Length: 187
Image 1 (cartoon, rainbow, N blue to C red):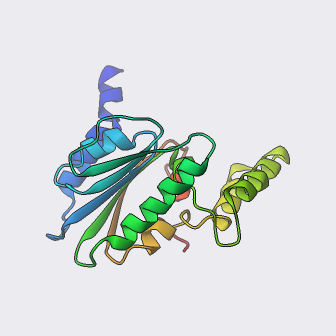
Image 2 (cartoon, one colour):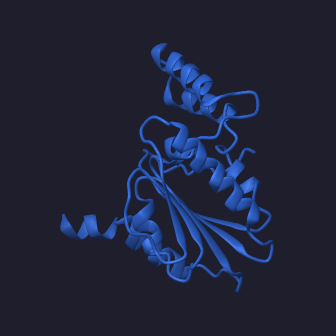
């Protein structure tokens, strides 16, 4: 059991995955969002510039900034963190590469309302949909429609290529569902 748990450690998996990925000599910028974001960022060797959005404080690598936001319900800190992630993605030089490290909890930790929406209106709509018993796929579709960061919009904000590593906490490991896919279409 200990060996299996160690093999699934998100930090270890990030280190292994990044070692196997050719970034084409492009300077990487990291954005780590989720409950495992701090651990994932710590193992992102070779990335000296990044942003971590996590539910609590912790030690992040040199050159990485840490923003603490709310989980499981988004709040004003979550919105500020989401806007900071969008700004960081937009600032990546086109000759660079954005390495997105996404884990469970990302949807609450980086929550940016779509134009015309507020965080309060998003929360009210999702709460009402949950009270009606909507299945998770329908809830995620609603969250995506009401968001300026979910459904691939973080990647869309970036002018450089985007590499995404996902530590899944969902059945089936669909990267569009983990954190509601900030770097995975439909755009």
